[in-house]
Length: 301
Ligand code: RIB
Image (cartoon, rainbow, N blue to C red; front, side, top):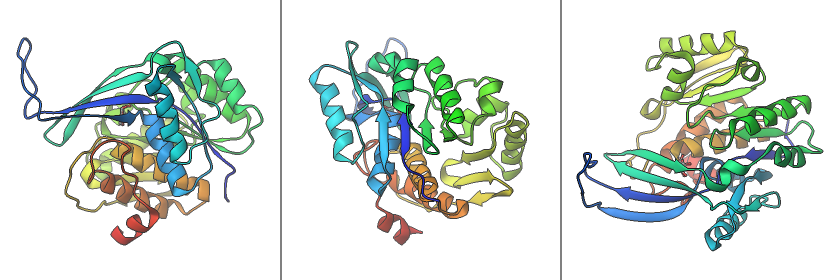
């Protein structure tokens, strides 16, 4: 069944990416190969994908009053995200310093305005919702996010959580999550198991289900994704691509996933599309400078 709207409560960052051959040691200075500045933030990246694919997507977040904050809002609007609930804050827009080395990234965050998203913001944002989808990640204050989940459940929303960057989740919150979408290191933090094989994925799922998480999707990088949704489960392999930049690939996966949930598609098909979307995102530079289209995804399937 088509859901009404996807409500995203998430981060908006300015991403500063430096590509390097090797990370400097303490006290050492090295030259980078390339510097690039763009808009990012896990919340913004995921919302942009869902909206670009055609979902009715509305965003709550905070940015600074400086020109870059306003430009970040325009960027989201240009991709079709409803930005009416984004608030201008006295704190500057969040920053992500991305060190890109050997096809992998290390990200340092300064939360800035993201840290000011409050429970009152959430109450205003979710006022009047019924049966929609809520999507959150963990780059905002955790108290605000736990409150959002509590409110969403009371309003019978479908709660989708991407626990990135990895943080502990209280037991009473875990059981309110409808879809937990996590990678291997997030799985390890929550269950003490770093899943590489299907058996290890099943062990992660068993632990999380004991806490009451309903549906779990584990992203496995080059191996694809393992899912346990209702009584269905299985590994969905991904496609091989020439990797240019992995930054934001997980966000593209999740944007595609919530789009599929919003459309009411069958879960196996949703994950098949999501792994391909994530792989295609690796073929271009930067987190949200490129969003694959449904046609590109279908051609690559
Ligand atoms: O997932 C990638 C994102 O993580 C970047 O855009 C950066 O802003 C951080 O939030």
